[in-house]
Length: 280
Image 1 (cartoon, rainbow, N blue to C red):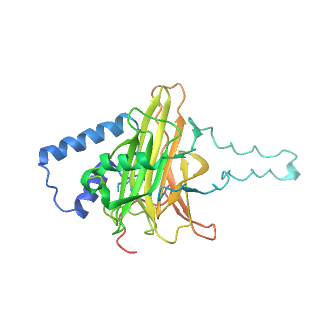
Image 2 (tube, rainbow, N blue to C red):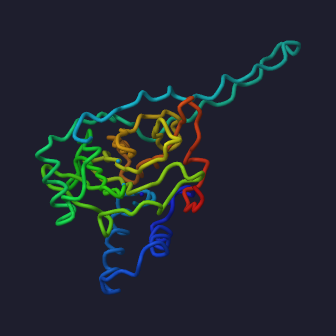
C-alpha cells in the first residue's frame, strides 16, 4: 500500500534500513519475508504507504469530516455572443464506491489477546489507544489495535477476532521513521485486503504532532474526505470499498489530510511527499 506520492515498498525498506540497526535475522530470511510482503501487497493492488503505527479502551473520538470538496461551477461564456461556453466536464465518476467507514470498539478482553498474540512478551509494555473493528473483514483482518509504550513508541496490530498480527517486522515501530512533509504526520502500515468479489478492506494508521487537530482520509480521485479515528496521538482508518465487477480493477489509493485547530489543511498526501524529514 505504486502511487507517486506513496513510497514503494523497496523505498520503505531502504528507509527503514537507514534508520534501524542491522537486523539479527539471516539475510535469506529477511529477503523471504520482504518478498512475501511484496507479493501480498502487489497481489491485492495495495499501495505501500509508509511504515511504522494510533482507546485507552474508551470509545475512540471520531471527528466530523469536511464536506466533499467539489470543483467550482464552470463559468459561462460572454453574454454578448449569445452562446454560453461549454461547461467544464464534472469530476469523472470514481471507479469505486466507499460503502462504509463505520468502526466499532473492540472489547477490552479481546484487545489484551490481540496485543499478546501480536507483540508477544512485549505486550505488557503497551497500552492500547485505538482498538476498532473495521466495517468489513478479510480472511485475516477485521480491525486494528494501535498501542503505545511509556517511551512514546507505537505498535500497530491487525486483529482477527481475539488474535492479532503485524505485517511489519518487528511489530513495534520506533518513532521518527517516516514522516510526511512538514514533520506533521508519521505513517505506519497501510494496505488493502480483499473481502469478496469486487470488495476490499482499506486499513492504515499513523501518528501526528500537536499541530494536528483533525485527520481525514480521501480515496483515489474522489475529493470526499472521511474522518480517521484519533486517540492518544495516533490515528487509524478503515473503509469497506467496492471496486465493481471488473476483476482487474485496483482499489483506490488512500490519502491522508491533516488540519490544524483553525480548520486549515496543513498536510495533503496527494500533493505533499511522504518522506523522511529530520527537522521537527
